[in-house]
Length: 84
Image (cartoon, rainbow, N blue to C red; front, side, top):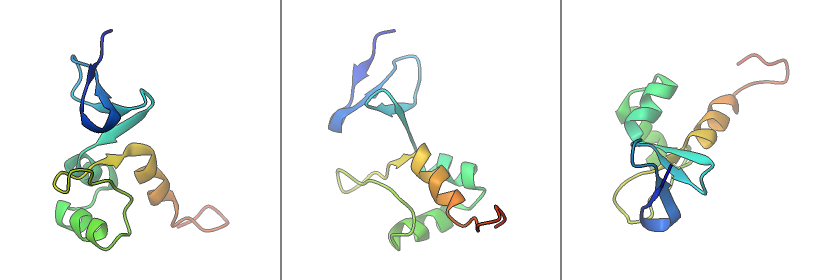
């Protein structure tokens, strides 16, 4: 499958709207973060603005998130017994 290039080293597969970085890490949107975490988009904005949620804003406008970073963030509240 041929891949196209986007800005900032991100690549995408023409048949898929998902952005990939280094062909390994899936980049997701704010809306997808909200769906994944089961939080509202306004809560995601607040967590992003406060620096509590890992993100990237390379052009100063659009927010980008790595699915793996969000998953790690979600699991970071886990205690030593594996219970939140």
